[in-house]
Figure: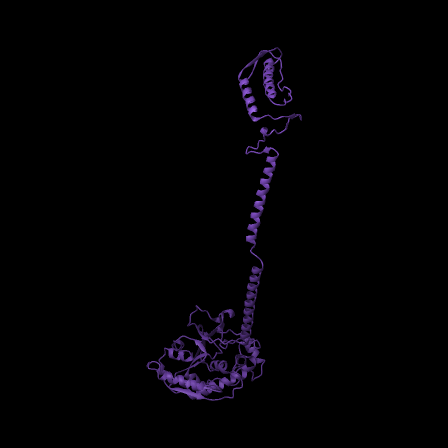
Length: 436
């Protein structure tokens, strides 16, 4: 990653000298570094090789473990910062040449930075200048986060805090133990802001620093002791300001540091993984449970269709039985809903006054009906006296004709139907009356 940045720098490589310090290393860092540098210098592209390259090995008795918690824990900060200051000063004294105009400090774990960063920073022509430094985060942690909180402006709260501390104390930013309420360069970033906007600083972070060589030649260095209650890069910023050099930062010009999970991040990752496994197990159990339910119980829709068909068949059966029963009793209910007696079967009927009537054949009834129709066509005349109008004696004569026809029909049967009372009432009246 670091060497890919070296290859991509747009500043002329042959005008840049490289210096590396390897200290307190138990792995193959120095061997690997040497091999990568040889490959870089042997690149056939004439724009790739750099000028003078120095690899210095110096142990400083590193006591702090290199895991994230140890390196960034509050308890280790003061001693760690002082030790890093010694390493920076050692490298600077060994690598700085009279021909150098600028000194650029760059951490090896920068993940993303503009290829033009050297020209971009030099263009401001400041004695000390730093970009903003952020780091990417996983989506579940917010996606991104300010990383370097060591670039800041001094505050009255921090100055008051410094007065309460011992002379060897070192204030470090980003920890609850020291609430300084300083304006931090990192928190002022606007992704759409002007990348050339400058902000005066008192302390600077060490991820990416460009300084004029004359600043170091004049005696400014990285204090490995408490200088105004600060050490290393923050003490360097304080010292440069004390010596009247310009110290600025670019809040909207950003480089990105490699993401290193903190102890809290790792703990959160473990919790998320446990939750994921729990959800997967619950889903698996639910699927198996539904499968068993489906196997143990048949589909209710098929049973409902069968039950519905059975009920419909039973209704039809009961309806047919009822119709049959009504037919056996001698009644048929036609579409017109008007009951008709089946006279041909000799069914016994009763009159309105309860007198039992003997039914005759339908043919004879038709014959009688025809005779009655013929009789109605013949006018029957009568006369009488009385007040009002009415059917008169003619009506009475008409009744006699009807009665005679009924008697003739009854005489032809084995048993005569009892003679009913004549329903026609004759009333006297003035004038003639006709009954048809």
